[in-house]
Image (cartoon, rainbow, N blue to C red):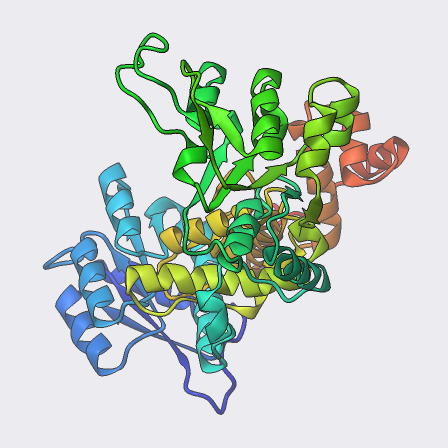
Length: 483
C-alpha cells in the first residue's frame, strides 16, 4: 500500500471491526503500510467509543459484528460524521444488505472470499479518496460568482460573451430572433434572457416544443379553437398567441412545424392577426416570436420542407450558441453553478468538486452539451456518499454508470496494476514484466475469441509480433514450482 502520510504528519488510521480474531490479525497484517495505523476491534460499541474520541479515516467492518451489526454501525458512524468512510464485509453478501449498505453511504461492500484479492486495492482507493477530499476542503473557495447564481445563463468564454452582447442588443427591439445550436446547448435559456431584458419582461413568456405537440393539435395549441370545431373541442380554448399578447412566444424546434401551420404563422408575423380553429373572427395580437432549431433551415428550405418566406421572417437576427466542447472554459463555471444550485435545493452540506474531477469534466466532449452536464452533476450528487465529488463519483457517457468514462476506466486499470504489483512483492521467483506481457496477450486473445488479427489490433502490435510473444518460453510464474 502506498504511503498516505508524511512522517511529520499524524498517521492515517484504519479501524478493523470483526468478532473473528484470526480475521482481524490477518487483515491488520495484510493492510499494514507506512503511514497507516491499524487498530482492531471485536465489537461495534468498542469501535464507536474509539471513533468518537479519534475518528479514523477508514473503517472496515463485518456485517455481523456484535452486538448491533455492521449496517447499524455504519448508520451510527455516519450520524457522528456524515463523511465517514466505511467498507462493509460479509461471508454471505445478501442482496438486501448490499443495497442497504450502499443506500446508507458505505464506500463499498466486499464478500469475504474476495478480500484476499480485493481488500488492499479497495482500501487504497478509499484512502486516496479521503486524502483528495481533505485536500479539496482545505483549499476550498467559492468559485461561483454571487451574481451568477441569479442569472439564467452563464459563461465566461469569448464565444458566450458574444452571445451575451447579441442578447443585449436584440432585446431592445421587437425583431424576431432565430436561435441555433445543437440539442442541449441552452437555446431556451437564451430566449428567456432575451425576454427578461426586453420591454416585454412584465408580460407573459411561453415556450412550446413543436416536436412535443401532435400535428393535428398544433394549430389549436398556437391559435386556439371554438367549441365544437372538431371532435373533443368541448369548450372554447385560447391559444398561445392570445395568451402571450404583449409578451414573447418561443417556438423550439421550429424546423419540425408542418407546412400548413407554417402558413398561418407567417400571417401572424406579417399582419399581427389570426383566427381560432373553427372561427371566422379575426383576433389581433402583439407577440414577439423567438424560434430555435438544431436543423439547417437553409437546407430544409431547399428541400421544400420549410417555407422560404417564413424563414426570412424568422431569421431577422440569428444567435448561434456554440457547443460546450468548443467553450471548455465554461465547463468549470457551469458545473460549479449546477452543484451550488443542487445544494441550495437540498439544503444539505455544501458540495464541492476535487480539482481532478473538474479537470475530468473539462476534458470530456459533452455530446449532450449543457443539458448532459447538468444531468451528470445531478446523478453524481445522487450517488456520492460525501460532500466532495471525485472523478470516480462522476458518471460520464450514456451508460450512466458510476464508473463510466475513460478517466474512471484508467483509474480502475491502475488499481488493478497496484494489486498485481502488491501480489508480486510476496514472491521473489517472478519475472514480472515478461509474465505480464505474455498473460496479457493470452487473456486478450481469449477474450477476442482467439482471433490473432483482432487481438494484435487491440494490443497495437503486428500479428507476427503477437505470435512471437505467445510462443516465447514460459517466464517464471508467481507460484514457485514444487521440488
